[in-house]
Image (tube, rainbow, N blue to C red):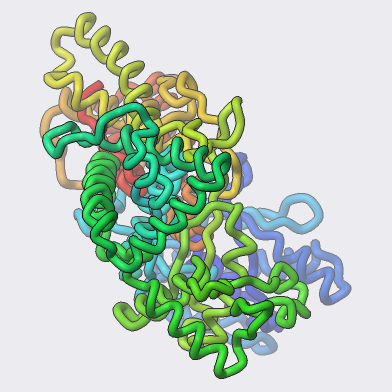
Amino acid sequence: MKQQITELLTEVLISLGYDGVTPEVSRPENIDHGEYATNVAMALAHQKHLRPIDIAKKIQVTLEGVVASMQKQAGDLTTYQTGQTIPSFQIKPEWKNVLQAIEKVEIAGPGFLNIHFSEAKLSTLALELLISEDSAKIRQKSTTHKKRKTIMVEFAHPNTHKAFHIGHLRNITTGECIVRLLEAVGNKVVRANYQGDVGMHIAKCLYGMQKGLSGQPIPKETTAIQEKIAFLGASYAAGSKAYDADTSAKEEIERINKQMYTKDASVYPLYEQTRAWSLQYFEHIYTRVGSTFDRLYFESEVYESGKKLVEDGEKKGIFIKDQGAVIFPGKKFARLPARQGLHNRVFITSDGNPTYEAKDMGLGKLQFEEYHPDLVVHCVGSEQSGYFQVIIEALAQLLPVTKGKEYHLVYGWVNLKKGKMSSRTGLVVLGEWLIDTVKDEISKKVVDNVSKYKDSGITDVNDISETLAIAAVKYSFLKVGTTQQIAFDINESINLHGDSGPYLLYTYARCQSVLRKAGKPTKEIPEEVTLTAEEVSLARLLLYFPEIVAEAADYYAPNILCTYLFTLAQALNLFYQNCPILDNPYRLKLTEATAQVLKKGLYLLGIQTVERM
C-alpha cells in the first residue's frame, strides 16, 4: 500500500507542477492520524518558498478528487481529468485498492497530510493474505536499491580448530535472516560461508596437541564430537599461551605452520583429521540453528590464487613493494570523505606469504567466476570495518567486475560483563553453551506447563524446548540494530510477557488454539464490517506486513521486522482479551490472518513455530 500511495502522490504532484519530487510516506503510530501520512507539502514549501498549508490544500483537493471520481465510477476510472490548466494523469490498475480504501485526506499542523482508510475497506484489505498460499509470499518492489538478480550472502565464517562462540551465533543468525528477507522480496540468493582452515591458529592448536599441553589425550574417532571440539579449544588456548611466552615454542609453531602448507607428513595427517572434526561440528551447529549453505569456501583453496592475483596486480602498479612486502597503497585512494578509512595494508609479507587480504582477492575472483553475483554481502563484525574498506577497494582495482558489488554488513559484538570473548586465551562463551543454557531454563517452564495442563498437547518436552531456545536466542540478537552491541540476558530472552521470541511463539500458539476450538474455518472472506478499536489496530498492522518486509530487506535490518511482529502480537493479545472470537466469522478470519503473518514473519527471522504452548 505504501508504494502505491507514494506513486499516486507523485502523479498528483506532477499534475500540480511539482516535477521531480518523490514524497516521503510514513505509517503514523497514532491511529488517529490515519493509515499513512506525508510531509511532502512542508518539504516543497522549503524548496519553493511557499506556505506549506497552501501546497497541502492543493494536494488534498486533487487527491480527494481522484478518490471521489474513482469511487463514483465504481473503480472503472482510467484517467483523472484535473482541469484545463492542470495536466491529466493515468490511473494505474494497482492503485485501485488504495483509491477505494481512502475515506479522507486530512491536513494536520502546519502542512502534514494524513490519509485515512474507511473501516469497511480496511476490514477486507487486512484479510487478503488469506486468499491463497502464494499470497503469503512477499513480492514487493524494493524501495532503496535496484532489484538484484543474484545476491550472495556470505556469513557464519567459523575457523576450524577454534571455538564456535556466541559471536559466530549472532553472525549466522543475522546472515540467515538477511538471506530469507532478500529471497522474500524476489531475489535469488546464494548462501556462502568462508571458513579459515589454514593459518597460525591451527599451528598453535596442533603444537598444543603434539606437546600434550591441554593435559588430555588425543580423542579417539569414536569420541563424541563435543568432546573433540573441547579438546581442540583447550589445545589451541595452550598453544597460544606457549607461542606468546616461549621463543622456542614460537619457532616450532611457525615451522608447523609452514609444514601444513607443504603437506609435510609429520603434521598434515593430524591437520586433516582435526579439520574434519571441526567441519563435522560446524555442520551440527548449522543443522541445529536451521542454516544451510550453497557453497563452503575455504582459505586453503584461495591461498595460491590470491597470491598470484596480487603478484599480477603488482606488475600493473595496483600493488607496490614496501620494505620487501607487497602492499596495497590505500592512502592514495583516501582523498574523498567516503574513503578516508582507506590505508596501506600488507597483502604479501616480506617472507613471501600471502596474508588474509591476499586470500580475499582469490576468494572474490572465485565467487564472481562461479556465481556472477550482482552483489556480495559480507556479514562480518564491526572490528573489520577498516579491513573491508581496503579489501573492497583493492578488489575493485584488481577485478573491475566487482566494483560497486561488494558490501560489508556490520554486526556488533555480543559482549559479556567480564569483557570481550577470546578463544586465544580460552575465555570464550560457546554458541552451543548459550543455546543449551537457555534451553534448560525453558525446559523447566515447559515441564511445569505439562503438569498443570494435561490436555496441552505437548508430547516432546525436548523438541519444544529446543525450538523455544533457538527462538529466544535468535530473536534477542535480531531485535536490536545489527551494529549495536549486545549484553545477552537469559531471563529477558525467555520472558513470555515481554519482547521475546517465546512471546511471539506463544501468541501464534494462542491463535492456533482459538482456530482449533472454532473448527474448520470457512474459505470465504467476510464482507466489509464495522470494526472495534482493537480490530482496527490489528487490521492496520496486517495491512503493513508486505512493506515492513520490504523495508527490512532494503535496509538489511531484521530489527524492523522484529519490532513489527512484537507490536502485532501485542495487538492480537489485546484483541483476544476484549473481543469474543469464536462465534464471529470476521474475527476468526482476523485471527487466522494474524497467525499466518506471525508464522511467515517468524520464518523470515529463521524461527520455527509451535502449534501448542
